[in-house]
Image 1 (cartoon, rainbow, N blue to C red):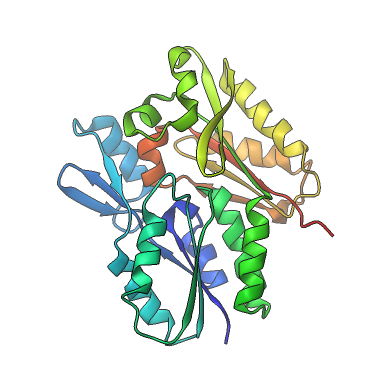
Image 2: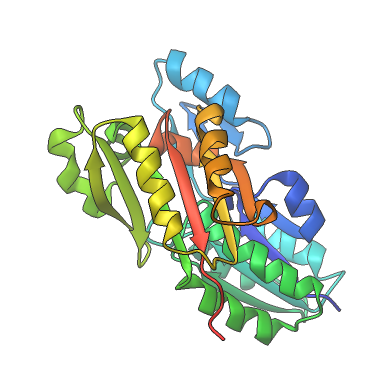
Length: 281
């Protein structure tokens, strides 16, 4: 039986791609006061940013419950006896702990492995895409688990922020705290290392930021996959993706919208780039 793969909504995999690859996505939740919205299930990114701009209530986020994962485990156990869960960084969310906790609620004999990707957004998404392709090609669970663990060190995610205000407000700023002093006058570029947010550089303009993202990608010309994501500026993301075709074949470049949950912390104007290095021969 084919290995079934589960991830969370912060992988930023589109619903069409998830269906194509047979990946089950468990949503996180955005809260506006007492109103709860499932990430890209009961609230789209566009709706989220309208609320963010106009609502006096500052949004918060929460991870899926163990019961939400257990429900998915039960469903997939009817189709397979091997299940792999790959979540966003446990240092940024309790989602990994919920996925682990759900195993104790699970009664089937199906084997479940849970991996903390130490990544977020398409840093996680490209790992999941690569793993799902291997599973569809017939790889067994141990082989897919091994490929995910190797891919974690090959996944490089960086993001341009128009401001760090939202990241600071949401309490997820991590080691990028050092950038806050100049956050009103610069455009920060950050990355994720060992599961934590880490600053890379500060720039003065969007155009400089896009050049930085492009030049970063150019350092990985043999990449297996690449991805461009945006919050509220699809035209700028499209231009960056088009530039990347000078480096990568078009079919290796994915485009996606940053999830509402990430939008709580990133705010409008964010554009992210991820490169999954080719496997070493």
